Length: 214
Image (tube, rainbow, N blue to C red; front, side, top):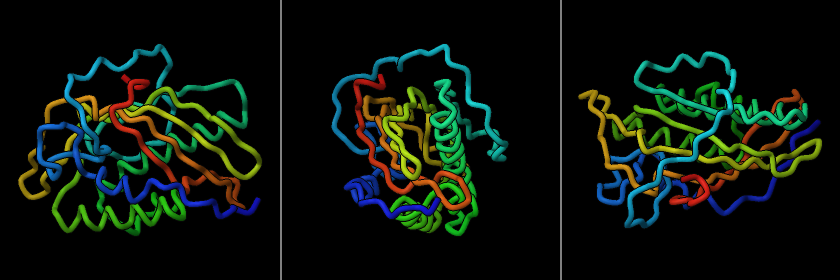
């Protein structure tokens, strides 16, 4: 299948402020990590628990201080489960790229394309120039394939970054922030199928302080 060029989702410009920034409402944005901006005045609720087992994914070689938890959210539908598996691998790949700070990483080109790829290339270059990487725990849950056909798919999922932080490369110190509702993000990703029968994220958007994800 040839990959289609999808319409741009009006998100990348808004999401630029999210990457390598935290989500606490009382800290400078340079001290935060990959979360979306937004206003909040109350403490976050405990994210919804789930008995779903973690997704079984390849080893992406992340350092010990970067942990990623992704619920498998399998459906029993072969096509949907394939999409969810590759989307989960893309989330792992994103963390690896932020560890390596390599804008030409094969992890990017394997899992991202079009607007999403251009966005991450730009943000990785910025993070590298500013001497920042990532640390902490990233949680992804309630992943659902909302629609799909032979060539395209839309996946929604929750993200918890309450324990994820920016880290100064030179000092090795984490720039910790207080948890806030902004740490809980509802994401929507558009994926496209390639001629090699793989799924790539083309574009995405995120809603911070999502009540659905708290």
